[in-house]
Image 1 (spheres, rainbow, N blue to C red):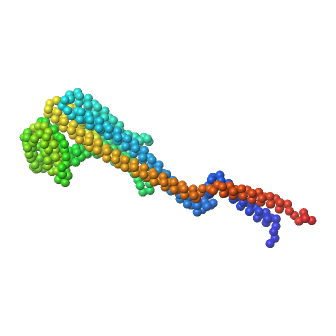
Image 2 (cartoon, rainbow, N blue to C red; image 1 turned 30 degrees about the vertical axis):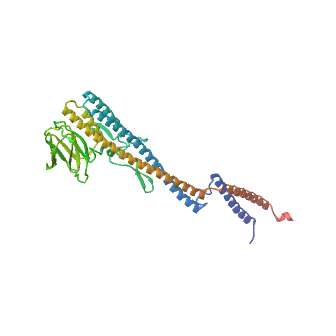
Image 3 (cartoon, helix red, strand yellow; image 1 turned 90 degrees about the horizontal axis):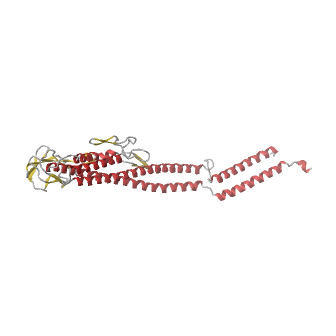
Length: 397
């Protein structure tokens, strides 16, 4: 094989390009502090790093969702805490008003305070998060959910509950719609409610209502009718006699697994209704209390009607307090779940970053040594090439 000068040049340039390519790669590694930056440099490693990065990015997005839900639920919990405080203040006012020693003016003043609490509750029900979205509107986050009305408040939201994904296969509700929080509150004691007939002419007052045997209560509607001042009978909705007895002040009328305590002096023809609890808006409860407090009259019969109305309102406020506590417990459980998941994802992300680092992080000292050797090789190669280019047989003649 004939070795020509052209062949030598070609071989040298090929070797020189390889040296320069390696040198450039080492320089890029040192600049980026990465062992490789393209799949060409390390196909297997690059594939693994890409998979790890995708998983890491997804986990970080879940964290973003979780933090958003955490903030929103925290805002809801604060709002519900204020609702509970307002309800407790309202209950105190109702107890204060439920005494015969107050004048109509006194009760009117209490009604004004109750109305102010109602306005505060409406404001809380229309709470917005940091993004200006209504917390209690369901899916209708851009629409103000509650507006005052003659009977309490109207609801313009929906029944939706937004779900946010905070991990693979795990979603969590980032709020509760206003219909559940403020409208679906059981009346009475939560199982049944007792009310006095508006046409009663005696001074009978409803007291404690309890379920003595849940299995025996059928959820029906019953009337406690006074056939005489000291005689009563209980009839069902079909007017069938259930039980009867002699009334004494402060006794409990018991039937079908329930007990209703009565005090005062009912008149002949007076009646009291027992029916299964239904859902009632918190705002209707407040409005009913306000209406009762604004009624005039100081006769014993008028005060008995007022006492029954206030007693009914207190029972319903107690149910609202219980309902709000249950929802807050649910919010707390969701916040705990988010905190736990954020801790888990933090550990996972740390492991992913360590895996990426073990594959892609540069051994800086080794890279600097390689760079020095490659520069030396390049310099020596260029010098050798320059020397060989000047050689000729004529120089030895």
